Length: 59
Image 1 (cartoon, rainbow, N blue to C red):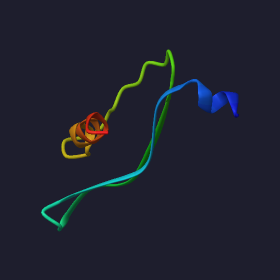
Image 2: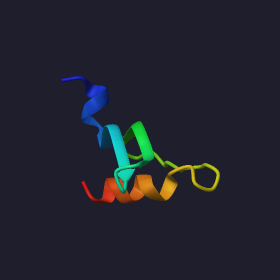
Image 3: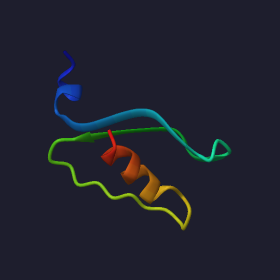
């Protein structure tokens, strides 16, 4: 095993979120968070920060 991946507390790959079969809110989002790392999601209004957190919490 790669020691780098064994210390991850969260890993998501290529997440997509589509609303009403038409509005693509997220496309191809990947994220790896190592244990002990502090992470912040930054972006303008409508960038997908809340959608990302909702998608991760539904895993």
